[in-house]
Length: 218
Image 1 (spheres, rainbow, N blue to C red):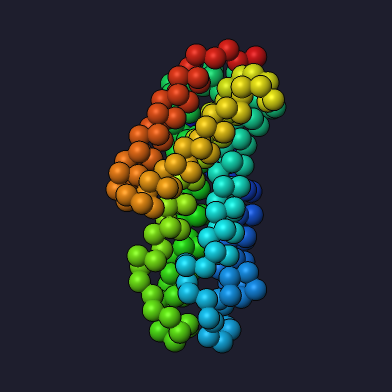
Image 2: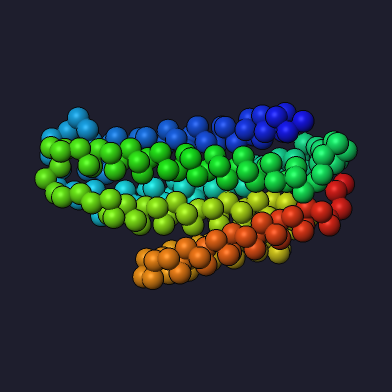
């Protein structure tokens, strides 16, 4: 049963993940987009410290997080499959846990790959004229981390009943504000910002489980 659910959820998110991976790889390898390319001559751009890479990486990560969170929830309502899932011989909280596990893992893995590839290139001698330290990747990892908050906020917005132009999008909007705050805290204080991010993620997971077990499914 669990294997079937994992397979189903993986199929749900593979499309968005594939598009995001293509965009990530284009960003990392395109000299036009980042000023850095393995096949190009030495670049004057310092890896990870240029605004171009961080801006595009953040946009792709946020788009992936929102798309996956909404697709895993809204699609069930559109296809009217919630009742079918409810009658499976599995606890409803565990079923939601499988959804969250697949969606969050897919987002984290897909968004970590371009950071690691870019860092591997930057750490290779002779590829650029500037020094490279792994600490230079900190902001990219911060964006990677706060994307989990965006994903959970999107998931909760898609799961909640209500009007789209009413309060239904409130969790997504609130998570976006929280993500910005967590990024600022991690950027200035480091570990305390990570702790706040984990606490907010945990709170959203609790709210998702509460809404999932208490709402009426048509």
